[in-house]
Amino acid sequence: MQPLQGITVVTLEHAIAAPFATRQLADLGARVIKIERPGVGDFARGYDERVRGLASHFVWTNRSKESLTLDVKDAEAQKILLRLITEEADVVVQNLAPGAAARLGLSFDALRKVRPNIIVCDISGYGGDGPYRDKKAYDLLIQSEAGFVSVTGTPDTPSKAGPSIADISAGMYAYTNILAALMQRQQTGQGQHIDVSMLESLTEWMGYPLYYAFEGAAPPPRSGASHATIYPYGPFPAGDGKTVMLGLQNEREWKGFCEQVLLQPTLATDERFTSNSKRSAARAELSALIVQAFSTLTAAQVVERLEQASIANAQVNSMAEVWAHPQLQARNRWTEVDTPQGRVPALLPPGSWHTAAPRMDAVPALGQHTEAILAGQGYSAEQIATLRSAGTV
Image (cartoon, rainbow, N blue to C red; front, side):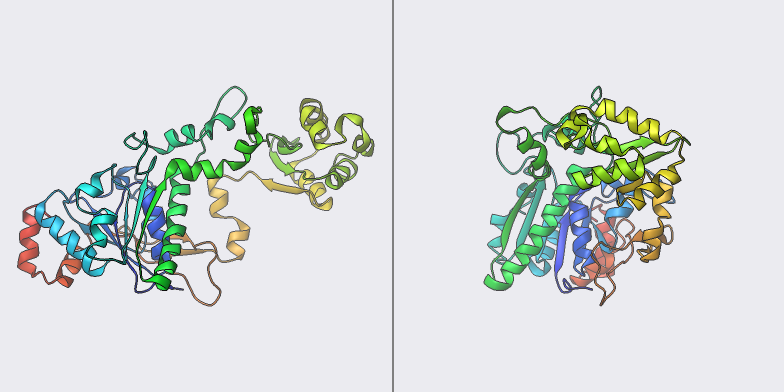
């Protein structure tokens, strides 16, 4: 499963957004050369030590890549980088500080003069222009600017998402735009400049609450793990202290829920609850009735009734339970990848093809491929040793 085999990506990346995008290109067979600072590397390498001494973010987003250390502020390193790009790269990805890539001569306008079919993808917090261009951007800050935090959490406490969704959304749009640019290049032979901002990516994901609050209307209220505008839809305690997550989508399901789960068929026609908008407005009253009905049941018994009534439900899994999830196990979705600290489990890429296995190569050590890449450019072992002693690589 390597449709991008033969495509070379050179990436000046750190943290999550760009590494997540390029890892997926690597999953599809692209050769991804990751430029890292000598001695330090991508600062995400130092976020934590949770994976046998390696950082959890780094292990997740950097498998199947080659690590080349270059001090890009060094003139000789800049020559190496520019030669690598102009002679080998199909795609350049960067999420450096605003303007940094241009100062290194790596803007799309500069590169296409020597490589007209180059694809350059710039990933930033706010985009390549506008009044916020130079503003620092981290995931939490973009979640706030895009309005996500304002509609997430409890009525008393706004909350961020657990995973870094602003980074992830930007990485996904970078990935799909690069694929589209590669398809366009097949047809036209021309390169492309892609400008992906975290703010615009996450704002796209905010489409439902934005339209819900159209023309000054009130936004969806913060409702914890419950749905803001559909009810009942969220967590409910069972009598054994466990929590059951459930959701209703229509009046047919509401009728079945009353008859087969609550065992209170008259509630289905109770005027307080005869539409979703009424149920949502009266959620405090309805919640009390549901909690009372579940109080004599274990979570397993509640789930059994929900299944019999064809009501959607889920378990609120811990991370340990996700690692052992029976559905992922039954579908053989886990494999292993090599790391500098041995083999670790890794989820197969979603959407893997049945006709071929996806690429799942090692997570690189810092600078692991420096000698091989430079040797491929014609550098001798002695020249590489000199570059290393000078701190260039």
